[in-house]
Length: 64
Image (cartoon, rainbow, N blue to C red):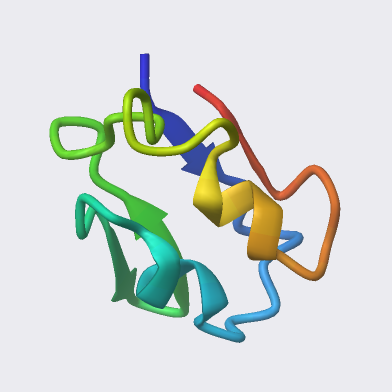
Protein backbone atom coordinates (compact mmCIF):
# COMPACT_ATOMS: atom_id res chain seq x y z
CA UNK A 1 0.00 0.00 0.00
CA UNK A 2 1.18 3.53 -0.71
CA UNK A 3 0.71 6.81 1.12
CA UNK A 4 -1.46 9.67 -0.13
CA UNK A 5 -1.64 13.40 0.53
CA UNK A 6 -4.92 14.96 1.67
CA UNK A 7 -5.10 17.83 -0.83
CA UNK A 8 -7.37 20.02 1.31
CA UNK A 9 -4.77 19.98 4.12
CA UNK A 10 -1.66 20.37 1.95
CA UNK A 11 0.06 23.75 2.35
CA UNK A 12 2.22 23.24 -0.79
CA UNK A 13 5.38 23.76 1.25
CA UNK A 14 7.27 21.11 -0.74
CA UNK A 15 9.05 19.55 2.23
CA UNK A 16 7.74 16.08 1.41
CA UNK A 17 8.91 16.15 -2.19
CA UNK A 18 12.53 16.66 -1.20
CA UNK A 19 12.46 14.07 1.61
CA UNK A 20 10.89 11.24 -0.40
CA UNK A 21 13.61 8.62 -1.01
CA UNK A 22 11.68 7.02 -3.88
CA UNK A 23 10.90 10.30 -5.71
CA UNK A 24 7.21 9.42 -5.61
CA UNK A 25 5.97 12.93 -4.74
CA UNK A 26 5.39 15.54 -7.43
CA UNK A 27 3.56 18.87 -7.67
CA UNK A 28 0.52 18.52 -9.92
CA UNK A 29 -2.14 21.12 -10.44
CA UNK A 30 -2.45 22.96 -7.15
CA UNK A 31 -1.07 20.37 -4.73
CA UNK A 32 1.44 17.59 -4.21
CA UNK A 33 0.51 14.01 -5.05
CA UNK A 34 2.14 10.66 -4.32
CA UNK A 35 2.49 8.19 -7.18
CA UNK A 36 1.31 4.90 -5.64
CA UNK A 37 3.41 2.90 -8.10
CA UNK A 38 6.59 4.59 -6.83
CA UNK A 39 5.77 4.92 -3.13
CA UNK A 40 7.57 2.34 -1.00
CA UNK A 41 6.28 3.72 2.32
CA UNK A 42 9.99 4.12 3.13
CA UNK A 43 10.11 0.45 4.08
CA UNK A 44 13.61 -0.92 4.57
CA UNK A 45 15.01 2.61 4.29
CA UNK A 46 13.52 4.40 7.33
CA UNK A 47 11.56 3.56 10.46
CA UNK A 48 8.94 6.21 9.65
CA UNK A 49 7.49 7.57 6.42
CA UNK A 50 9.54 10.61 5.52
CA UNK A 51 6.65 12.54 3.96
CA UNK A 52 4.61 12.28 7.16
CA UNK A 53 7.58 13.06 9.38
CA UNK A 54 8.39 16.39 7.68
CA UNK A 55 4.86 17.56 6.91
CA UNK A 56 3.93 20.64 8.99
CA UNK A 57 0.25 19.59 9.08
CA UNK A 58 -0.30 16.35 11.01
CA UNK A 59 -2.49 13.79 9.24
CA UNK A 60 -1.84 15.13 5.73
CA UNK A 61 0.34 12.22 4.53
CA UNK A 62 -1.57 9.05 5.35
CA UNK A 63 -1.77 5.42 4.22
CA UNK A 64 -3.94 5.11 1.12
